[in-house]
Length: 254
Image (cartoon, rainbow, N blue to C red; front, side, top):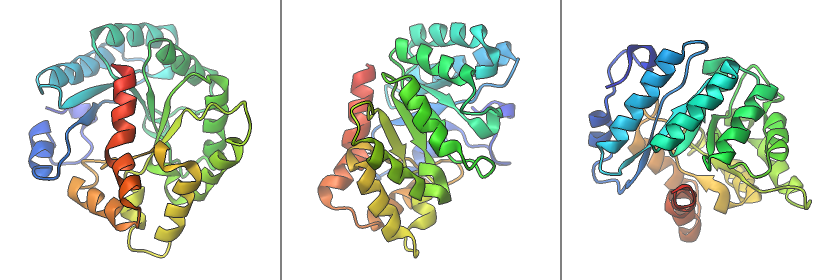
């Protein structure tokens, strides 16, 4: 069940709906995630406990992307330690929904604590209100070089900014610990005039750092999968994007 304050759409979207939608698609694991509110630690714990319970009951299909709010300071770090001990797999942060700036030192503190706990951090990485956000993620990766950052939505319509990952990869200081999730953006750009440019940019990043995502419930998993397959990646690239890259991240967290 989805908590009423985490309801994305007017219609309910329980885990059973997602499982019905992916039947026959070959999807073997999926992230179940929540987003922590600011200054409501009781609800944050309730949400995290709910997603952990769902994952425990799914026989390993779902893995938990628990959340904290960077604005909660030391209490957020304490909650990270609690959910890590209970089996959280990733951490979910959403600058838009949670209303924080990626450049806030509190965000780096959360990422540093998650890294110490061996938890990758999944960010929503498209903001129509902060055109400097792509650069802020680069700075964050440099500030916490051992972190594993996953940037959902590939900066959306601002995807050309990802080319900077190819540029910084030429320098020895770049940790290359950033993965790009193509959820929503692949569906947006597939079969359109920017599809070829999107693939070119992702290849500049490196398809060993690209992850499939569906952005359910805002997008349909089958639509998202068809979109990625339509972009023109070769078989090796598709295997990396649809399976190998995520499997390696999950194995490193286990």
